[in-house]
Image 1: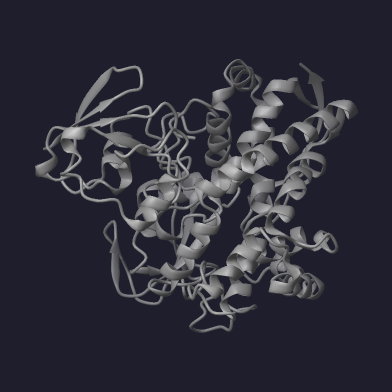
Image 2: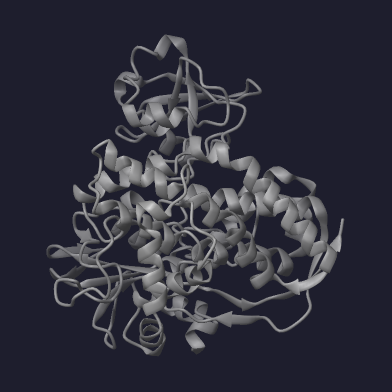
Amino acid sequence: MPSITFIHHDDHAETVSANDGDSAMYTALLHGIDGITGECGGGAVCATCHVYVDDSWLGKVGTVGADEDELLEGVASERLPNSRLSCQIKITEALDGLVLRLPERQV
Amino acid sequence: MDFFADPHPTHEVLREAGPVVYLDKWSVYAVARYAEVHAVLNDPATFCSSRGVGLSDFAREKPWRPQSLILEADPPAHTRTRAVLNKVLSPAVMKQLRDGFAAAADAKVDELLERRSFDAVADLAEAYPLSVFPDAMGLQKEGRENLLPYAGLVFNAFGPPNQLRQDAIERSAPHQAYVAAQCQRDNLAPGGFGACIHARVDTGDITADEAPLLVRSLLSAGLDTTVNGIGAAVYCLARYPQEFARLRSDLSLARNAFEEAVRYESPVQTFFRTTTRDVEISGCRVGEGEKVLMFLAAANRDPRRWADPERYDITRKTSGHVGFGSGIHMCVGQLVARLEGEVMLSALARKVAAIEITGEVKRRYNNTLRGLESLPVTFTPA
């Protein structure tokens, strides 16, 4: 099972294992990671599962879709070049060890 | 009416009877456990919406009004109209609305504190959304009193052909005429949700015939549901003063306190789907063309999914509740609802020390919506 490390805004880190094919958001909710809200349940409408992808993983998580790009304009914390919606990051073995940083707030 | 007064014992019977139950009276299958409700909501290819999300099957009966292009539609038709409404009600749009909505909530609570004692349904749960939503839609000032009766009609019409449904439809002509007129482009103020929907005709995303029906969807679903959501939250905070105290000590809980009220009271109690093929739900075979009734409220209190489900707990991890539905048809106005709920609860927590129920609490009966007719309260200023 691929592992994902979530680094909270206060720098404490939590590493959890993910099911192949689940989204990073769903994995976070499943493990009760505070800092990922995911209000809309993964429908890509709410922008409350915002994450900053660690630079070393940016090339591997795929590109930002058109709808995701618009939603990122509405995130509560600053949008940065490595901003993604974690509901749009699908976990595969190739992402084993993925590091995602959590923004200060989601709403 | 006993069921509407307190549906929870019946919900428990339905949940414990099995993963799928058959209701002889209306010849429908029903699911009331969280797992099955969630599964049905998330399989739109098998459980379709285009044959109606009420008891009536549009393949056999003519709908009482032209079919909704979003609620009563399946992919790929649904995908296109949903994308349009998602953009009109996006997080970026909510950011622009937030300050105005928050200021209106503060003003409403200040006004109610002057009065001290009032009806929290008419004067708060209805008055607050009515003070922000019709303006955000871009509606004209005249005729807004038709909005709540129209929504009440829509949600009654999802139910069986009982007295509630018949009465609502019989009285509906003026409300339907008002709503049909407000959906037209010329009647909608620039910058509002309605005008934004019509602007999508110019970009080619929808046709000129489709735009009024999409505006109608927001008029049907955008007000009565939030009224009941905010009413539910105030009723919860009045009944559970310890939770109100926790909210007052940590204002960042306002949004979750609203979310938990939506789980706990489930303002939208039920929806139907229709099977597109023979299917097995948790070992139970259901044929093609059958109505499946989902008890959202029962799922939201299923002890298989929620620890201590009968407890209103504003710090609960509420994600996954089906009070706004789930999957592709999940409430398109959820962000507006949450914004209204959050800023109202935040205003209450900052300005009000105690909410006391000071009279008889009366239920309002509707085939789909659960809420109150009257909630007499007294506010103590903070």
